Length: 164
Image 1 (tube, helix red, strand yellow):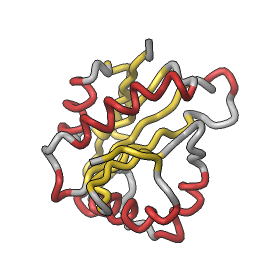
Image 2 (cartoon, one colour):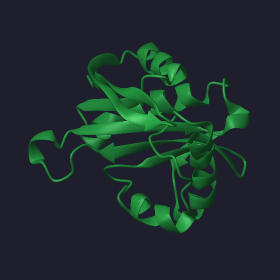
Image 3 (cartoon, helix red, strand yellow):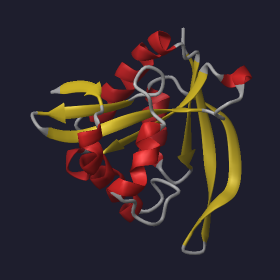
Image 4 (cartoon, rainbow, N blue to C red):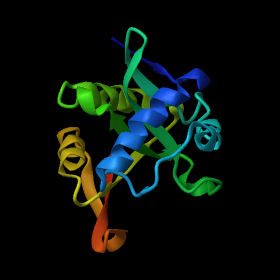
């Protein structure tokens, strides 16, 4: 099992995993599945030297990924802050893959010149909340009722971690 930077040919696997989260509901704010073609721009916005997509693979299979994304792109005062999002293939949940990816990403942040890592999580996503808290992320903010799923409003929790 390996953690490495994603390549363009990984896009179909990344899209499959992401669409599992979309279909499950309340794991991401997207409610409509994405396409490989539609995710090309997203992928290009993640240059490996600054905002990598990290994949966890076993052999030729991608079991999960963590994306490090720009926080408020173009605003230089927050250039050393990034957002992390993690997605694991549903058949590989609870196997330590998310933990391995978060641990790797946090350790990689100094090389990327990231001083603060944030995560924005739907308040109904208890698994992600527990995962972040396990790694020392703290609740820094809350936006109540800003997402809506089939008539039910759900808030966003902002978590943050200062990188030492």
